[in-house]
Length: 280
Image 1 (cartoon, rainbow, N blue to C red):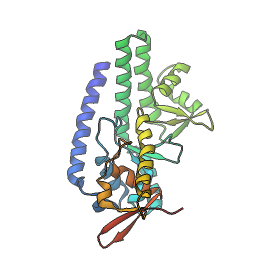
Image 2 (cartoon, rainbow, N blue to C red):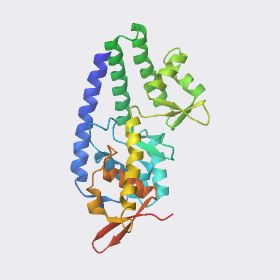
Image 3 (cartoon, one colour):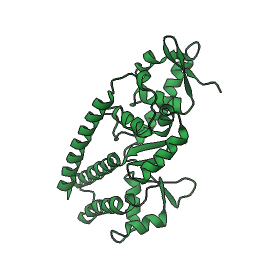
Image 4 (tube, rainbow, N blue to C red):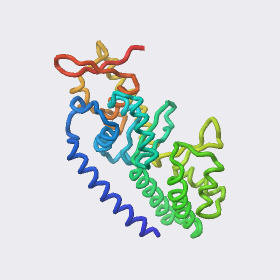
């Protein structure tokens, strides 16, 4: 079973790398942010930002796009929301509510998410086998629950959240559900409990914790950098080239996010786009 998962992961990785290379070629991801800040099509914007997602050892998740980034890139926000809903129903995307304390939503291509989940489960399985913390039956449970979750829950529940009874009902299509199965899904980062109603779970992206910390710190760092300038503004071209100290995500990622969320705004000048801190 572990061998099959490993081979599947390698196959998906090769396919993902091929797709990414094609997208990078098609969309010319070396263009500056000023040259490809806005788009007329939601799916095109998603594919370009996926290809431009920061590649770093410190970023341990598959590419994701923030809803705020789409709002900065596609002028018609109503159309963005409509397109996202259609793409979600077609199982092209999954949308996640992020645990940042703000109204943040991440968008991930469905295949990327499945690859992230499979990698997490395989890593967890391998780690437990090496340190011998689980009995053989528990090792089997890890793989079985993942199989049920993928086949019956992810394929049938496309919304960002799921109620406890519905989760149990869908998992039961694969086998007898136990409380420890739900705990396993939570501990592995596939689900998080909703704070307001503990009977509801949010679907989650495994291993995203450190990236979310960097997201929050990067937002503060960019705003602090601009607030220290005399007019709280800077030309986009040199700003995009600045390196961040506290975020594994790059400046381009944060600028799209902060513009889309309304914290920053852009204005055309004779010498190019200028980025300003929005007034309260």
